[in-house]
Amino acid sequence: MELAIVREDTGELENAASALLRDLAGSDGAPHPKAKHELFEHTIEIITGVSDTVGEARTDLTGTLAEIDAVAGARDLRLFCAGSHPFSHWNEGVVSPDPRYKALIREMAWLAQRLQIFGVHVHVGVSGAEPSIAIANALTGYLPHFLALSSSSPFWEGHDTGLASSRVKVFEGLPTAGLPYRLDDWADFERFMATLKNARAITSIREVWWDVRPHPDFGTVELRICDGIPTLHEVTAVAALAQSMVSMFETRLAGGRTLPFPSEWVLRQNKWRATRYGLDADLIVDELGHQRPLREAIAELVDEVGSFAAELGCSAELTGVDRILADGASSERQRSIVAAGGTLPDVVKALVSELATDVPVLA
Image (cartoon, rainbow, N blue to C red; front, top):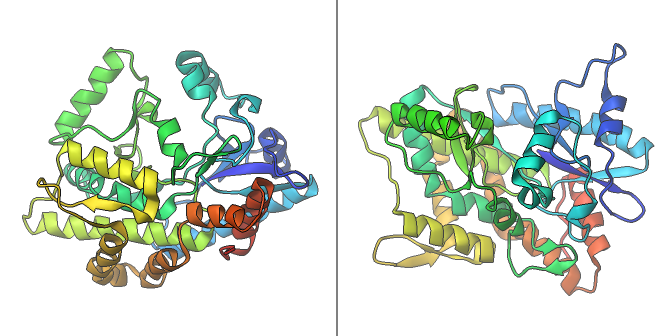
């Protein structure tokens, strides 16, 4: 989870990550094991350890959030998790001290300088290298589902963008971000990574910012499409859906089945529709252009993976998807606050409240 650091009084982003991480350090100065810098000083990233269940991951996140919230509160700062900050300007961000981030800014210039965005990434362990490629390919067809459920960046620098996720379009500016290339097998993946390195397009896989990718270091498929997600029940709902889908795909592969992979035009069009309309998008479901409401497709998907969620012990968390469909994604909730007469600082207050209380703010 990438967390935005904001001032309690104004709701503006505050470049305070280094200060908070110092406060979190151990008595011997050792850094906190699960809180770290991101690209800019107005962001702290928190991670979990390896978890057997989604419930364990939630417990892990809850503990780290409590620690950060305590040191932030002592400095009159607060935290939220959403795809964008509604009104702060990107050019006010200070780059974190990590040399890797400074190199990124030098190389990508304005494309990286404007990355005032926040996301949630979910890693799901897989049984081996070959399944990871097939599963990542199959998940590509479901990226609109995850993006719509997590969409939380309708505002950018004080303006309503008309999008459910402005973060996606900002991030797609990077040359190795966005939809993944279709790869046939693990050897194909390794060849392509070597080619990118030889071409000096990347220095490591950490610079392949695809919406979904195999992660060789962790033995996972990493889902990177999601906007920042404001509440832990929404985070765990998305995680439960991801874990259940990976389990379903693993089972199908073991049974000798071939996993689906839509054509590129369908993938691009559906991702755009989720970016623009969120849960209200109509999804293209075949090569003839037939469509169905994305909300219906998501509800059907939850039913389809239900038995796998039960085996994994995340049925309770998976029901959170139905709650998102009922309450609306964060992009809808944020807009409803403004439609009811609220201001963008009021939106920030609501986002802070949602992370702190795990209760959606419904205008």
